[in-house]
Length: 221
Image (tube, rainbow, N blue to C red; front, top):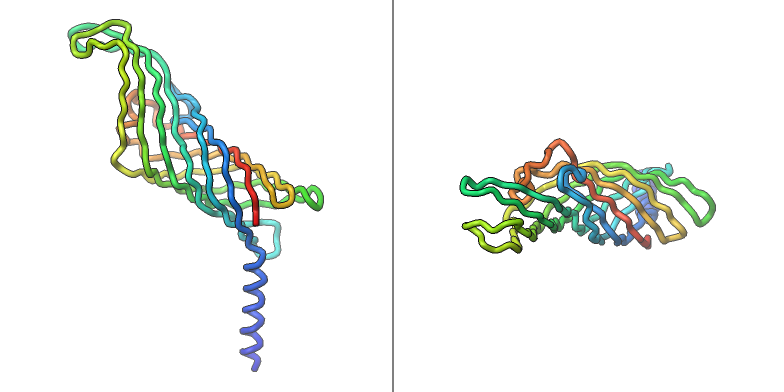
């Protein structure tokens, strides 16, 4: 009899705990760059969307937040290059766009700070793991002088990645909740696989992390 009562009590506790788990959707703009905008790299605006799960930790104000996002975490470049191909010296200006579509799994801890009955601020900190689904590069060049191997002065180069990449890094940010609605600003700092041929054209310094800032609107159910 006692075992039955304990079992029933555990079931009710589990149900009560599960009922406090919140699910939500998020979406908005990303602003990302490779190598922390070192050398030629610039910030690229793009988008993200996905879902989250907010799991309260016991009766505290802490929660564990995870979920899954689809995000473009690419970059841009622009600059000028002078090269010597043993027959002549030539230069060109270039503009490059990297599309880097990733599935991202956040692993975050948040703390709820109530401001009033409807407004809450939730700082967050943690890690993420992401998987690159597709990466491609499109580059436009304008040559300052013609040369024998390429007589065109305006050239567009498109390259596609065939391999997949696992990326890891840290995340920090803050969410502002009004009832079930939210606005979140957060930032990823990560070190992906640096051996990818699309990303080593100019031998950028590998000791700088990639940056991706998220500006998200959301709703918790």
